[in-house]
Length: 131
Image (cartoon, rainbow, N blue to C red; front, top):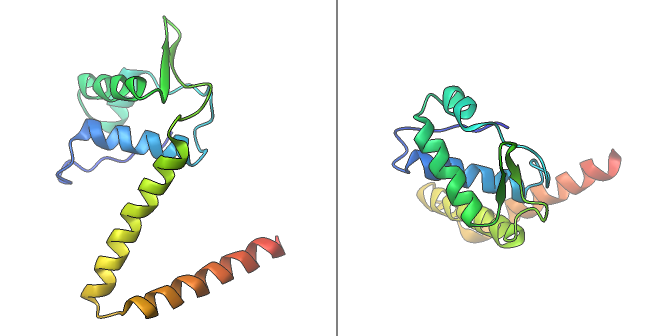
């Protein structure tokens, strides 16, 4: 499980962990019943306090995304994320917001941006069909 935190991001570290785990589950990179790293292990990897990781895991459990199994660890919920579709839309919306803002700063019109997206989408579809 690859999680990257940015202490200078302005977003609390536990929330960065929560958001990234949600993304990994929603995108299918973390499968149902897959085990998450133990709290201490992840805390050591991220160089954060174990309480920070524990708080993130509690938030994820409260949201139904993960489940704790007594003495066996923390696992992705068997049903995956109950909010998987909504979470994917939320993630994409955030990225679109950032793209639209950046395009505006670079004086790229919405029409130009849509054309670029359509071209990129077409290119990706072509690449997938060739595989």
